[in-house]
Image (cartoon, rainbow, N blue to C red; front, top):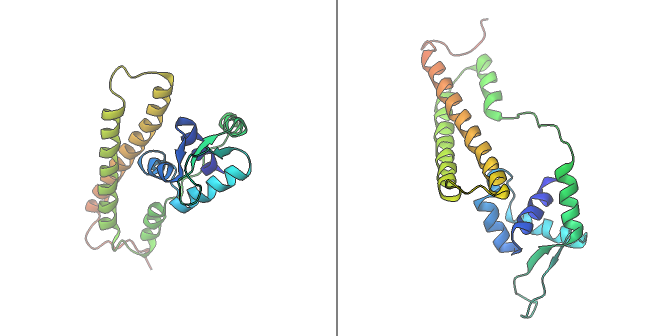
Length: 187
């Protein structure tokens, strides 16, 4: 149920066309709540049908022109209701962790190289987040809205920092495994 709320949030920040919204998702909200362009367009239609958003009137003919959407009071109320509702954290489900557990019984072939690949990806994402932080949150930018947006970015930075540290540790563990250890259980 969070995709409609992510869209409402983005549209409250700035009324946008579907195309602009998908681009904004790719550059911001998509870092922590991903959606395909098709999902976003489909959800815009549903939000319009339920009266949460509306397409702004256009001076151009409707056929082939971009619709720009804004949030209606019902949409703002729904977002406020959802924001205030308690929600338990979701359990971690990461295939890499399950594969490591499986490697303990079937062998570690391919795991170390995949750990290095994951480390490279997490380092790259961490660098991206730090660049965004430097550009978008210079010292002195501390309105309540900025502080909340920065808090979300800090979660991404802290999460990527965790993963890079953990993957470094995991690779050290792999280096410490004896060459004849294949991870299989004794017969």
